[in-house]
Length: 362
Image 1: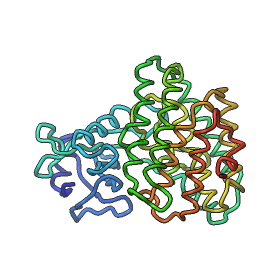
Image 2: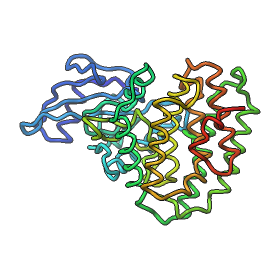
Image 3: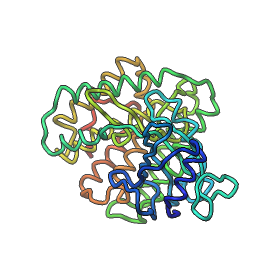
Image 4: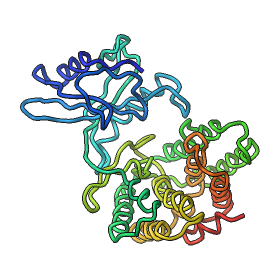
């Protein structure tokens, strides 16, 4: 990625927001500075920019994407992601707003689309603490609070509210199911990112999961009436809580519309993931939150058909959390448990939230 120079950033801000705009500070989040240039920032290293405009001090986050696997290899791949972020962030309730979308020229200056090499998206700065901090507290032995239940319930109700917005487009639903299998960020991109062999994980195992997921795609592809407004990457690190149950969400992915099971599995598998680290099974506070989240979602949505659509989405998220690339420090035993969960869920006709520990057994 290019070096972010102060003069280029000031020039961009004045072009975008007016000649009187004054850059106050910028830097990686938590390391703001008004002095040094930043090299190598990119995917996973957003920059907080603070400026004064018309007498008001404002902060935004400058986010980019680095080249890499998962469908991000080409400049056009990364440009598509930035343009989609700008187009969709503001349409989802509670999502932080995208303020602008632009590009870097060859000399590192910002904004000129004609000379663009890489794109970026500028989003508003929102205070809050990542939801995963609550998970870490419970993992370290913290007690379950009433607020923990309230937050899980609030997230379930939020998903119900956005999933009620439907779109009638059979071709788009089929595309989303197709992308679940073949998109670089999804199942095939993940299986391709695994080593050729990693202990018990080999090509035969990964291929069998891909094949099972494709059978599920053929089973689900005609359920176009389920196409709904989704977040698309609804995991704890993309949820910012403030006091109580007030929260914002970040980084919706892969478009506005999809299968509601995508969001529900993305969050709920993390209750299992952290519980496996704490107890070796779904138990204790994480089991309470897992069941509370599922119960509230099913009760409020009335969508019990979602239990017939979760399997390939759990497989997608399971491939993420079992990945030696994404989570290099997991024990082999825990990776085995995650793969057993994935295989058993794929083999079941319908997911039962009460049977998670049975899915984790041989």
